[in-house]
Image: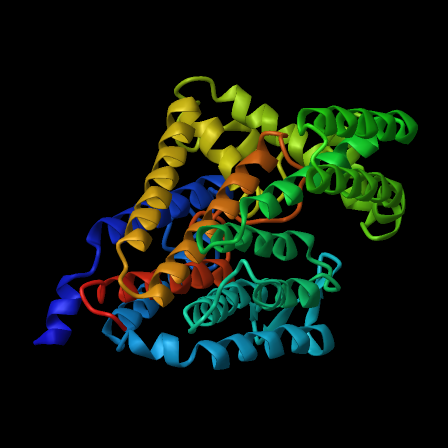
Length: 418
């Protein structure tokens, strides 16, 4: 009876939002790669037919998770985390190379991308750690442990190379903030990001001088209190030291394609027919849709394949061209409603493990959603991040489905403490 009640406690609004996004994604994939010789959306020789297969298997996975005892996810959190790390290491040794990245396991005609599942492992591992006894993120050792849990998968993924999948883990810093990490660390991270960009745009001498000037003003505002003066002085020196490392990091740690995309985004380079081609064509496609779009299957940018990767990373431009501003606004609204719903569900949990995991899900989805759309409209460099539930691919859809439905199952225990 208690098991039946838990199934009855499933949040069906979240399930409905998931189904709507998956169906809209499927229709968008059909429009993006429509083939007049294979017009049936059920044709499994085409991407839209294959996506249907992955949709059905995802639903089977979702139902299976709902029927499981939710306590198993907390019990197996560390084994799952460890297994995903082993899969990431294994793909570097035994994976196949696709588009210059060794990110896939070849399983016959199907390829599996372990980085899509490593996010689940990281979310479960972080949730298990933060739900332990005496975990106070104001203490340095606890913060370091949490950061190691978060960024170990990112460090393993980076050599594939897969910058986009590595960056996703930074979103989990929002979870640490919710669980007590002082806000100054989040602001410090954002500040380093701003300094990185400014260092690429402004002469280092002038930027360093500006940092010293701001530091001097802050010291005066602090009325020369010793701790304040020391903190501002150390912070200013660290900031100046950081901008001194930017050129080396930018030129030696990033690949040429990522450096070029950042330079184009910052207006330091212009290459609409080369490295900037995808983004340029995507913006043309979205802009040409106008308010209401050109109509389903009537998008010229889409029909004539002007945008590469249009069924995967650039699926959003298909929505913009064929359904216009109203269509894109509808998709954005659905994602925002889902994210707010997940935060609401996370806050009502009695279990710390469930709450932390809920915030992990919301943070990961938010990062994917915001960065993917920013890529397609030229507000972020192209880093290869799929749009959740929309982009073509079995690994992506399976990974996001498992990530979401584990939380839906945990939420069904909200009246109890796991």
